[in-house]
Amino acid sequence: MKKKIFIDGSEGTTGLKINQRFAGRDDIEILKTDPDKRKDIGERKRLINESDITFLCLPDAAARESVSLVENDGVRIIDASTAHRTAPEWSYGLPELSAEFRENIRQGKRVSVPGCHATGFMVLAYPLIHSRLLPPDYPMAVTSVTGYSGGGKKMIEQYKDSHRTPEYDAPRLYALSQEHKHLPEMKTIAGLEREPIFSPIVADYYSGMVVSLPIHTAYLQRAQTVKEVYQFYQAYYEGEKFIHVRLAEDMNFLPGNACSGWDGLNIFVTGNDERIVLASQFDNLGKGASGAAVQCMNIMLGCSEGKGLVL
Image (cartoon, rainbow, N blue to C red):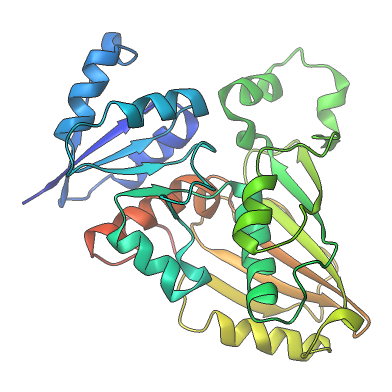
């Protein structure tokens, strides 16, 4: 029997990309609303409660409202917003972090998809903290470069505007107040004692991103050379089809757009035996959003995690 799927917020960037990944699937039925009723709360409530799984591709307040509309105990929710990422009753949708994360998604009624910047940070930081290679009070600083699609429809329109101002031609540092909405999950899920210093940058290309985390090897408890750290990540993510670990010995550049259209994630171990720079490279619309949401759904349905995805 086909599973009934409703996408609440199907006209947004994430919702549209989820729909694209459902093309050709014969194991699900998409519940669709009349375009004139897509913001009608009664219609949304009806479709949410008719579904087996509802995706929330909405602003935080609207996502919370949608959860409040659930009356059918059988409905499972996958939320792509920031609203529930640190809520204890919600499963965090990054299964590669540990067997426990994957099992929580498999059994969960409520799953929160990580933020794109947080995904890139978490795959680097979580193993270090939870394997006790670094202490939880280590002062982390992370830089992330992303394509403009990460800002949603409004930012996409700004970058595509033929009359845009010259500032859009150059990379732009933002969230200068250190209050970016991904910081709470970066601290909580990674198990840090303080939020990292986070410097996100948006640049003039559509999609893809690189997140970098520098580490002084003197603070590592074990695995203190570039090769040893590479071997640590290789072992940690062994068997994970979405994550590829690489030793970047001969690379001088990591382009932000190299993974656009792909649903996997590359981890690069770079630098030298005193100062290592860890980097994750992926698509902010793939493993950083829609691809991750569909992967979570696949786990919940018990089918291949990569079904409908580009790997």
